[in-house]
Image 1: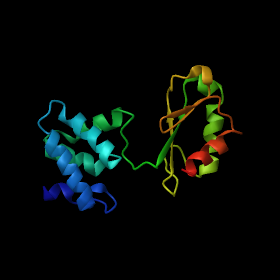
Image 2 (image 1 turned 120 degrees about the horizontal axis):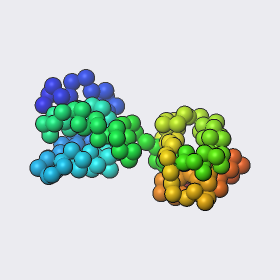
Image 3 (image 1 turned 135 degrees about the horizontal axis):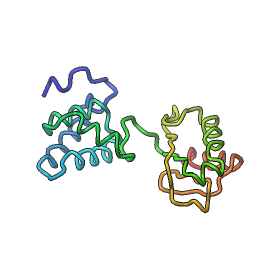
Length: 169
């Protein structure tokens, strides 16, 4: 399996022997299960925090499936990420009610306050900024979800306090 590890960036989990041991363990424990790619990827997302492109190639090789199958799963399902996330994930709803209610202004304010673009993580690894299509709280628009907490009727004036609350945790 040496060739599968060539060209791995030193920051990738595969380059860390402890992380690679976790990756190998997850693959070995689940390779015979029906739907093994989905199970393995889900467990890697939970245990490592993300599924990098080199990890995807490695998993494909170890499971003997095409890399495109692994990439297809990771890129299709929104709960997978290919880059490490911060301690907290802040998602702005862009469903119709939230969009009309001012979500784009909230995103602009968050970008300004955090100094990152959507899809990026702050330099201190505290907050990752993301968007989503619907949080199911249209009557509370615009809504923001931080980790598993949903906040409704968020404004550009209340957003800074909300961000500070999670930066302090």
